[in-house]
Length: 392
Image (cartoon, rainbow, N blue to C red; front, side, top):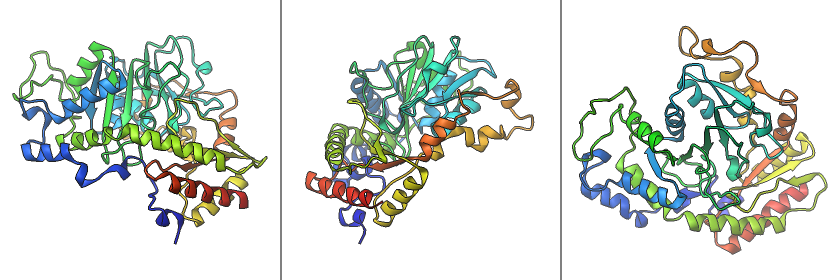
């Protein structure tokens, strides 16, 4: 029997392990109310309750719940009122959804190489950059550039993380976006949030996310006389209910991650060919990030951990300079939109053609931590990881 079966672990152990029928008071409330559309009720909707709780927890003036984080990114970008073909500087190391959100808004992604922490290297940005997306990857708090009017924080993998000054990630720039996908810190299967302190941005996003009108709860459908076109990104009451349940466990989950991270760090083998990539106090400790001396050692560690049933993953999938959407300028439009509005030449900022970043990713391995386990089982899990790594 493999380790994950013996300890009751799942491959993606975060918020999903806190889901329980006995803890679904909000979902029961929604079902008993028999209204699953947020604007159909005159009382406070579950989605509005979620947004109020999120705003209070994160310290943001406004929050808006949507179907997923990609929609949240799109809303943040659209609310800046861009022109077709405007550049958006995005990390070279992040999920392709960031590039997809930029392109679907008719904008052009410009890849910015990573620094040693694998976050966007802000020193490479031009002084006139207006739209920049910074991703807080793997729970790690990224350094933010200064002087960017539309700085969007992609916090899909870092809900609960904080900057050194105590602010929550997602609240330091123009807008912040969050994900409730299954493998994120908290989950409702899918789901997203966008937060902002900008009143005008929030008003624009709220209208756009529901066909261009600001709905009056209990009076659906009504239209504003100044309505513009929009799309349907409105979340449902049952999804918001699951997210409310998940938020009640956020502090417990974060504490469990901190506890297991401390345990795991004391159990890691002392090998000259293995470096643990550092985490700061404010990071969400979703995983150990291990950097090996060579890709061959990394691959051997992957094989050994997998054979023992210990969850792990690599980060090569996040290297956007090698993604076909970017390399081939792929589009479903006959005229190649929006790439037909892009300038000629490479849309990338890197000192070495991403060679250093590619090498870092080739040697990096992540082992997720399990916050839901009691401390004795966390110790057992950490010792099992150590035994495997010592034998590589």
